[in-house]
Amino acid sequence: MVTVLGIKLLLLLFAANSAQIIALHLLGSRGSRPVDGGKLMTGGHPIFGSSKTWRGILAALLLTGVTAWLMGFSLSFGLLFGLCSMPGDLLSSFTKRRLGKPPNTQVLMLDQLPESLLSLIIGSFMLGCCYQCRRGFYVGRAASITGIVQIGAS
Image (cartoon, rainbow, N blue to C red; front, side, top):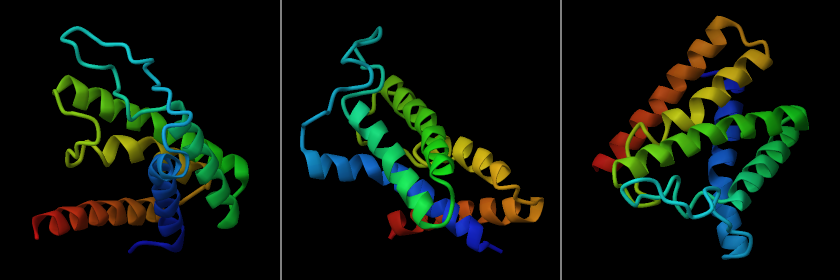
């Protein structure tokens, strides 16, 4: 059973992950300085790639904070939730660059789990969620990933 709290956490995760795209459409190339500074690792692959920018990280923090506040959470909770989603996002980009995948390439599970795991775990514990709530939320997250698979397969 997915709870209302679980749905709210999923919405926060959606805000954190969509903020970079919204910022790109609103600002174009302004403020799009890559987090890795354009540096390359051995093999000539970028560390994170050009799509991971400081603007995107700031946009994720801002949008997640405001979204959390609008849903009745504290602004600081939203900022922390957004901040916790960023290391996973960078980790998945780092891994995809090592695999030779270009920026914005979708890799099932690698794009969803690292980006969401830390923020969901910390968020659920900060909110004092009981075991049943966390279990329901993670079942809901697994269902949403499965839904992505089913949509992609059709």
